[in-house]
Image 1: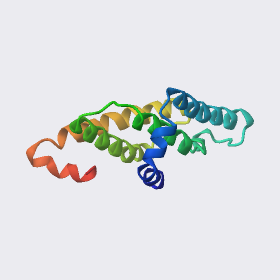
Image 2: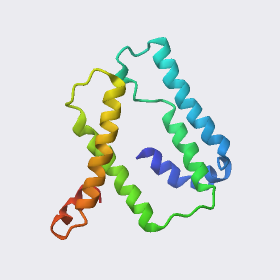
Image 3: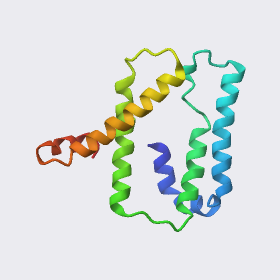
Length: 139
């Protein structure tokens, strides 16, 4: 939320300086390099705890700079769908925490697919007249 505040406050400066596609590559490269270094050096022996990145806020600013600096426009309906979908993805991932799968790749894939399916299901069900109360989960 703090990052979103600063992106909104300084969007003109971010838009002017980081509108090139090169910045997306730099941001993703930083995050991937950090992931590689954490796993390779053994800084965190429990691989499930490496999902917190120091370089991720930098990557997000660079990504938003690229998006803000380009003339693409998305319809309002599409933007709201992705906002709601992203909100639901964040909250539904916690429903998969109780599953104790020791293989990190399988656990990640299971959580990702399950969260996507559950989020889309909630979005679809909330369109029915007597299930509109589900919209309170993401609005």
